[in-house]
Image (cartoon, rainbow, N blue to C red; front, side, top):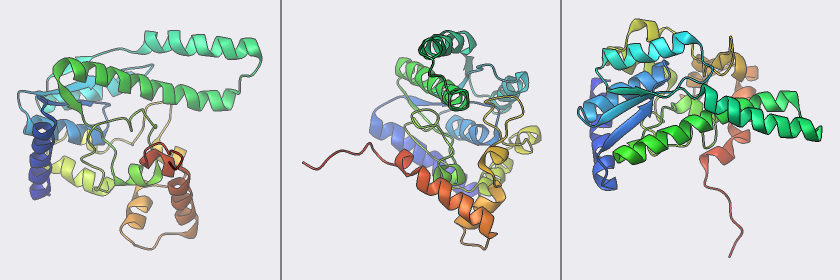
Amino acid sequence: MQRKVEELVAWLRKQVEEAHVEGLLVGVSGGIDSAVVANLIKRAFPENSLGVIMPCKSHSSDQEHAKLVTEACKLDSITVDLTETHDVMFGTIKQQLDDQGITDEKQLKLADANLRARLRMSTLYTIAANHKYLVVGTDNAAEWHTGYFTKFGDGGVDLVPLVHLTKGEVREMAKVLNVPDEIIHKKPSAGLWEGQTDENEMGTSYDMIDKYLKGEEVPEEDRKIIEDMHNRSAHKRQLPPSPPE
């Protein structure tokens, strides 16, 4: 795993060199994936790396954990609170839908969650342009395969260094990188609403997805959930389709 860390650090440096930019930044959520990426970009560019913390009606512990991550690896950070921006934008959209009598509360809850992710993406790219940095994503192999990310949200990035690592391998790497134990053992959550966890939302566990990706046997119910998620999210892993010439 130490060798894998060194390979990823070298790869990140190469991407920056080839893109003719000056460094890297990542949105730090307080979760394990962004913690690992924070450590990797700090190692790759000790003087030209940045963590961006973006609370948006988030649980206060998420921001505390994000600060814990950046302080532990001595990564420079900036905090941009998007709560007010979200309130204005989402409130305006919802009012228009309500006025037309076409609000679907269930769908709107999902749209709201995706809007938060896309506001964060826009924030990252604005800061990245200012610094001449690339935006580094945090999706691991399990999230990438199942499409458990927001299209043009947390999936809207320049680089995806963890995309070939299972969730279990990310945990192993976190230990090698000395990520705080509190982060390593935290329940994975996108922090989209109170009590939200990744595994409850997906209907299966990261352990099951990891086993599936490694070709190991998993219960039929879990296999079906994983394959259904993969098939439904195929569009997220592709460029927008275009008609033939």
